Image (cartoon, rainbow, N blue to C red; front, side, top):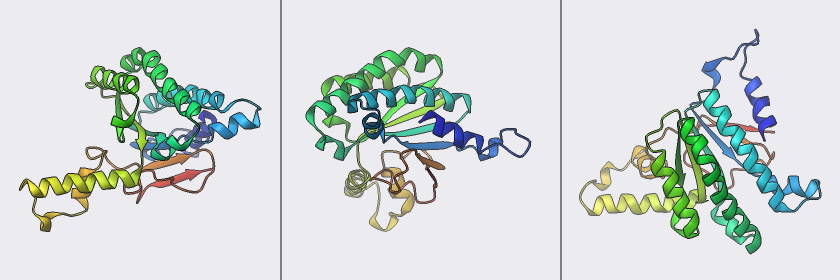
Length: 224
């Protein structure tokens, strides 16, 4: 994953070999997949691949801070991932808790603000508690917004946005004729953030997999 990101980073240098900061995104989105396939190629259990993905994520967050990227959104666990074997799902949730506990001091020191998007109420209680703690303790940090998509699906997000807009109309805060694209964007989980400038998918899969379908309308895609 990090080598893939480094290749992209080198492509942002000009002919003189200097980094062209104008070509760096303000908001970077990454679909973190391919961990299971990586483990299978090496004859390892799938969980080993997920653990390697967590290690790569540590380096990616550090790189984004160093490169002065302001927002990082990673697709960590989709609404469809619950269909995986129970043992694998449990291991993924344990890795989430472990990551938050171990990395929180470093994230705090680096000025990283932790956020999460998705239907978080379906996550295990321990994962919800660690997320809430990380979000609370880093809320005032402003070097990097680290946005983790968990139990996330873009279609579910759009359904939730429609419900939110309906509530605004019902309460009298909004008239139906006032609903426009900006209204929908504001009602999404990412409503206070700009859309991603760049999406990276290191596995080479040429699809969005129900990730940020509205937000990626004009985003540059980097798939290798």
